[in-house]
Image (tube, rainbow, N blue to C red; front, side, top):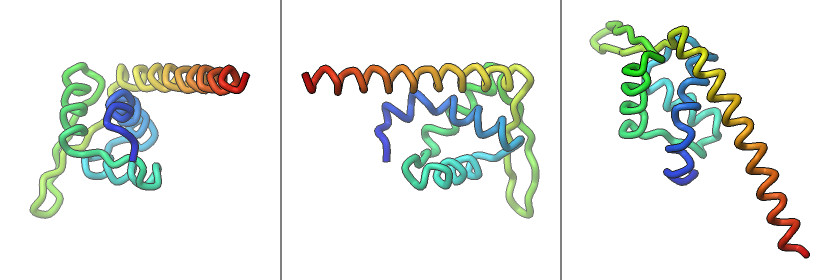
Amino acid sequence: MYSKELLKGTLRTIILNLLSGNGKMYGYEITQKVKELSDGKIQLTEGALYPTLHKLEAEGFLTTETMNIGKRVRKYYTLTETGSEKSASKIREFSDFVATMQTVLGGLKTSEGK
């Protein structure tokens, strides 16, 4: 598993990207999809996921829909148009950040070897 610090900085991007690719999802479904896609390296807790979902909703990036599934009530999250734009922006930003980090870390290895 990765550190909480790394996860905290990427959680919004992860959620926005998942919703962008999967349409509407409910919280537990999001946690399981992230766990599956990361081969168990990223395990979202409810304490991290739901406050982030609520904040994204308050910012206008998500809408919610409550559905009764048997005796359970599920809250589904869907991107708004603004959320879709934000998702694309966050993914570009994160991809650029990863490329920059690879360059920086690669440069550190090269300079350490001198």
